[in-house]
Image 1 (cartoon, rainbow, N blue to C red):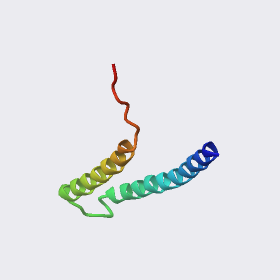
Image 2: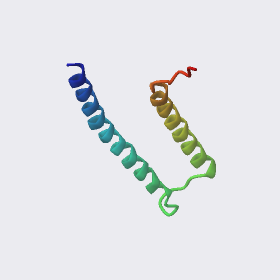
Image 3: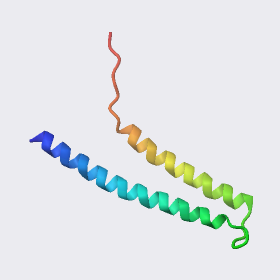
Image 4: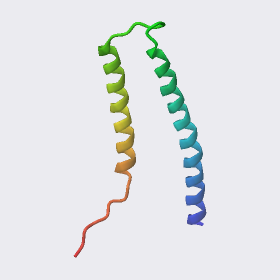
Length: 76
């Protein structure tokens, strides 16, 4: 019974994670379209701020996953 629940949770994770990852990647691609200097005017500081925040948020999300990993305890 528990194995069946784990399969359902795994399937649900895969479904949601794929959909959300696709949205994030699409948003990043759209952001890249703002790099055209003929269309937009921006400073290097603005670009730095954007990508610093993206990296910070990405690190936070990754740490949440890493925190949930099972830690192997060392034993002799």
